[in-house]
Image (tube, rainbow, N blue to C red; front, side, top):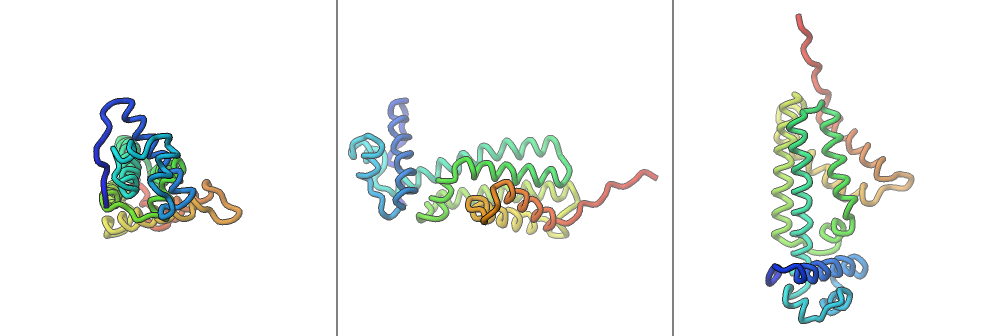
Length: 209
């Protein structure tokens, strides 16, 4: 897959670059990835086709840049949440709820990009690789808390990875497209309950003799 030709360095160039990306995201969502053309994107962004090609050789490069930006934002924001969990070390239900709520908020904040990258278009290889890396990093954090809380069964590494992959599928499915009569809050509660049942009860702390 093609990548952007260059990155903007000046503020005005950055504004043009971002306007093109935003126009691409809007048109990919409205018209579909296959039907959208670079001419449509340039017109939507209010720039010449030459300005678009200065940064992006084709729409694949636009998709790559959208995926790259999306994954970077996810990683940065989730890192803050995970650092706070390490610091505060809450009980099991609070830990699960914090992670699920944070992930849900990130998905709901930009559902358009999530649908684009996961449902409509071929995912850029680099973005897919970064998503897998983020997934592995999150699974390692989940494994840490399973050990801390003595939960998750004998193979906590596998349990953590399966949980992360299951939650990701649920967020991209039921959260962004809730069943009739349900809203995102219901889905978040359902995911929290699913995770708690999957890891099993946390042993009660030992009582002093």
